[in-house]
Length: 310
Image 1 (tube, helix red, strand yellow):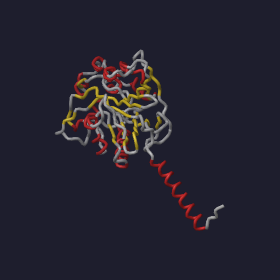
Image 2 (cartoon, rainbow, N blue to C red):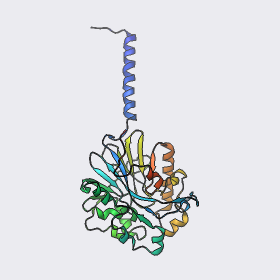
Image 3 (cartoon, helix red, strand yellow):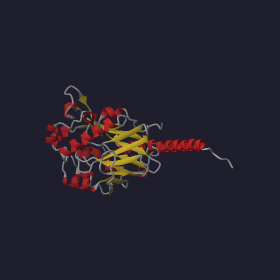
Image 4 (tube, helix red, strand yellow):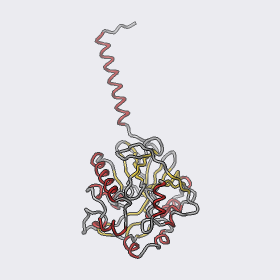
């Protein structure tokens, strides 16, 4: 038997405590989510015909021209792939035709290749999708839903109910009433995440967390994606159209909101923008991705290229 002196025992205990503390710290700073095998790609389906930046965000310049992007986010995960939004679908022209002339002019677009066609061209079977998560049900986000018969569509019921009561140019009922649409109402939990009151950990591993960002619509969903501790993205739907809105804590221009009745709740929308602004200051390495910011989209991997694991 080896007898330890009080000093040796004290040194040994101190070392054990140091090792335990290091292990706890490692757990705390370890990236949430199972980064291995998780990646994403941006699928561009078109763009707006263009407008001055001051018509897109209140703090924007009248001398800067913007051509907002329309697209979707493809997330590959070992437990099933997700599509976040659909962008402009195969039937967008017929869907859009119901709008009055002023809306067709204000929201004019240039078509690209629909998501369903891009997936098919790369031999991807859409039936492998776990679900399509719609940030919200405005026309430019839900246009491609009818292109995916049988694929589960996740949306909050309050968002769907508001859309059925809504009208053009925001909501187009032809996109919501497809005979083959497998609509499933998503139930968020009363679990705070990054300051947002309600959330859902889709895979249970922290890699993909849906959060409620209401205001622009009744039940808009943001998607927080963690690839590793250093690489995180927050796809925020139309909380703002551009990152400048987040950086400047600036809403959409008042006259555009008035003309097109863009927001379900203007005051709540502005509170959400302020919250996103604060989050960006707290997490400067977080990449916030508004759905239509073409400058941010340009820096994302474009389908069929995917983000590279690091």
